[in-house]
Image (cartoon, helix red, strand yellow):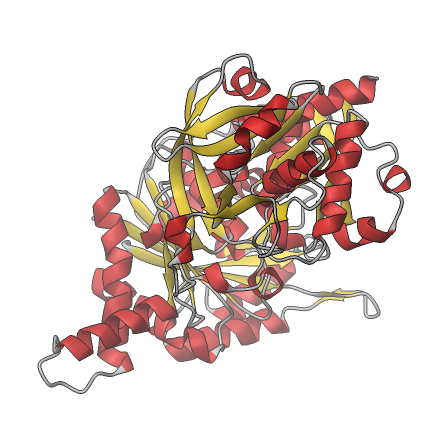
Length: 535
């Protein structure tokens, strides 16, 4: 039977519970355990697929087509855990399932209540992924903070599950904050005490406290926290701020977190260390051979989490090439009014990520034109690929009104349009082309050189597609259809032959990139940027 680690958080949001859970999973995998990781989100949306990025940040997509929380991206980047639709449990999914069962008559006339019906549904879902994947340890991150009314059913469910499983089968790690008050010159433990107090009111006594701090914790502070929070002194673990998130597993290992967790779960395994991670990832991050500047052009650029996987995949490409990637964030609306020559001065590569809606589109088209005409390595992803084809149709093929029907339904040259199946869609949630699809790659293309294979599979999240009616006209002017889905004859990758490195892909390669295994296209893109930097 799988053992469980429940990760909760207090005081404030954005404490890094996801990074902590992923880092712990990395440590336990290094000890030889098979891990599953689950994220519980308390919002009532069934999934984040219909949310604006300003509301929720990036939507992460799994192989089986689930639209999930961005923390699942951290889980996959740090570990080998299999992440699926079952790995993301929202309050919306839980309530929807229970209400559907009630309407069907499954509860045989009983009054349906939060306890036991909602909590039983949560527990059943937590157990399901452990059984399906036959894992040793299941790590469950509870979104939000202790004290949020929305989180209470999840906290009650894990309280019950800990009681049912018994000692040595389920533990709680509580991530909390130790703020440093500069004016007083002191680190304060009171927020941690109050946070643990709220958790204990619910009936959950934490086994380990993971204390986020910008200053090292003194022994005196550890003893004080242990005394007031009723935990062992050794269970007060320092989570000191680090420069790179990929240093966190190493930092927590120095604190002995993996050994402490194994002790609490009564598991005995040899320590195999993290040498490959330290040498292949952390060392390269700390001392790269040179630096390249990559401009990322989007409309959600002010929000760090909107393009989280893009930024991380660029870092991975840098690690693979032993260079530091300096990301230059460019608002696409600013390119509409500004001078691209000034905006993109000294950049070594330009990337346009995915997105929706017409705002900032003309700025992105100007960006593509500048990259194409000035031979700057260019990478267009999803919407970025569509923008690249529109720009090529307008400025290389003379179709001045070329557009996507997403932005102009009346355009005479719909280079990008909806498939017939998408025109019939009425419900917006989970109705895009989602999840893994295969792609055949043309030999002799930059993409083939990167993948070193003519058959790949990648994750998708979009409604609009390349319009095949325009394929001959664009190919005649030098656009290469470097990859396509043979089953539906859909264009997946475009390239420009007379360019050092110009690739657009309809899928989202950033979702499959890892720090110790950079995605082939990101690795090749950064390699091209390094070539540009060398001049």
